[in-house]
Length: 207
Image (cartoon, rainbow, N blue to C red):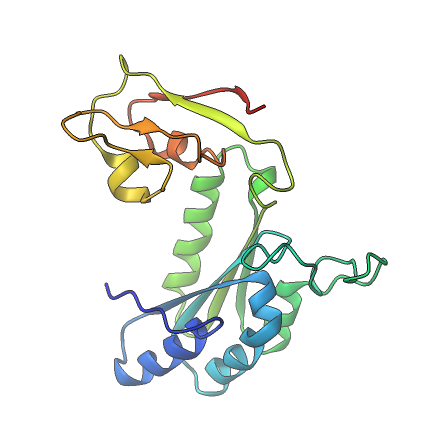
């Protein structure tokens, strides 16, 4: 696997180019909801036009989290706070000609990781342009931050939470065998879903 990063909104364009340079290999691109409206749509059209074998993952957290939580066309509120018509990202992608588009509402799923994996597998296995829109509120901004702690007695020290997720809040102190969760944790709970020993527990709402 090769991970590339050029500039805001370039993921889908790069994926389309790589599909031409390396045919027969599925390319996957990631983009945020605000950036999708800003610069992602032309790249989707280009992928459809050229029959690129790419999958687009739209991370829709209902805000412009990267630059200050501004509104965007998908929210239904203007920059001045007035109600407006929300533009549905899935509908836009379908209108561009993408045949397989799945939308996953993470906040409504009991096990969001499992639901996301199922949708991602279906999209990646599809031949040609496909997309998955992962919808969920911005953790730590639009909903209470849930605290998580590691039960050292249950933790086996497998390191899966640190090595697989790469979360900046999970830290393995030098010389220690078991990780700790730092105060910077935003409370998304993904680590608890991937822990094979059930050692990461919810302990309440951060005050």
